[in-house]
Image (cartoon, rainbow over all chains, first blue to last red; front, side, top):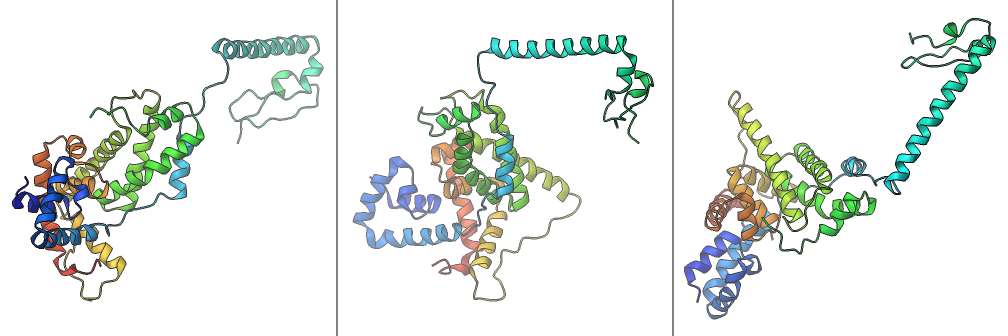
Length: 146
Length: 186
């Protein structure tokens, strides 16, 4: 059996809605209220008045920019397929690049003229100069950006 | 605080860890407004609240793959991270305030007795902001966030008696500072 004092304390602590009071005390509180409505209903009403004021404390809705930032920072799906396929693909890619490098090197060694007609960018953020002269390969590579 | 095994976010969190955009979106729809509201009411500052909410979810994304189901409710974990971030900011404010005293928050009645909705809202926010942080935290967790007393006390790492004491003192202070608004809330 709940005491009147405990009922008043609970209203002061948790507000005017018994559904928000500790679960274990709700039933006893409702029983007490049913028997002493004249005395306890005003207690709940006074507490509920503060609850309604508290509800007016502004919340804030997430804006589109915040949502966008969080969505773009979320984890991405892992690479599809068994690991050995992913590994093999990477290895094949590297092999192809290496083969292309060797091929170009050999071709240019045999034909210096061909080399001069190709622009190769090797420097960081270079301005590539297209060359169509008989200059050496050294002269055909990128000039640094101004 | 251990989860009871019925964490409603667990499935979504697993989807997030697999990089499923729909799970990310759904989890944000469900939890971001709550965390943003928590930060706003703790800090009384829209910009700082947004920063805290963003940082909380960035940490959640990092945590998603390592999340152990059953260890804690995800919502509780989010609240803990967000509250820690809020307290970091409140501490920083106090450090700054030792050099320059803060502006007094006006919680008194406005000159015009007929308060409009926005003004009413501002008064309540100011009264909440004027509470000691632990009282404010207890009220925001129990009243605004709708947490039960056991969960709120565990989150604040205090006993239920201590939580009830904070709530009672906080509500008494609010009642006093908002006494002139009785009946204004409808």
